[in-house]
Image (cartoon, rainbow, N blue to C red; front, side):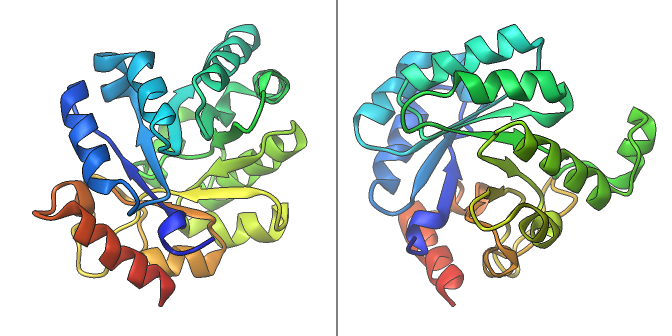
Length: 229
């Protein structure tokens, strides 16, 4: 992939028109657009299908976490929308991961969320999950691979260990990416785009440094340049 194709930008907006405008501004500049809970709740699946039909690669980031039958049905519905990627929570367990993998159709690929990048070590203790974070994320990544999931979403801090354990064909999407000199915002475990790619990530997710820039397309090009070294 080219550096531009590795770049994923979240459309974290409260209304469909804002999402459409940002998609237009970034057309041809990034590899994929991510539609998460906020925009999906506001605009629904129609906007996802619309953007996919326009040729945008879409990462549907709804983090399905439910009983296996429901997770499988949700993944099947996402595939019908024409998305490139869809994710489920690895913490849903083996049976839910198996259901997601079996429900996948067409070119859509499945991802499993390991540990959110906003979580600090104290969260694992509060949730009763054996840590440290790196160990927990690696354990969940292995579980996802064994269940037939195509890849994971994981902090850049865990990318190298997951790549070594899960091999070259396993997708790794790294959120919490901040260009050199940027604020970390609400992310606890961050890295630069170049560092994440060198560690073994296939895709990096960069949000506010692009979407809040005066010229989002130019910001995306700068980050692609940073990825390319």
